[in-house]
Length: 90
Image (cartoon, rainbow, N blue to C red; front, side):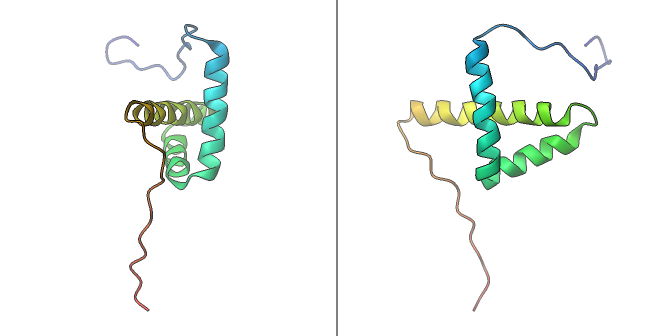
């Protein structure tokens, strides 16, 4: 990136544990298939760009998952997905 120019392809940072990164992305892939909120987030990010859609959306979903796990561990909480409320009368 330079000035107002924003490249479509950017180099991936090689720092950090490659095995941990791999397993976090694999976990994000599973979570996006099982959890509705993560699935919606993945699809939103997938539609944002024309190239490398799956890889980008999956990595961003993994970041979201890491932030969630961090907060849950810091607060000593269990994960409970948000409940959808059906307002239909009947």
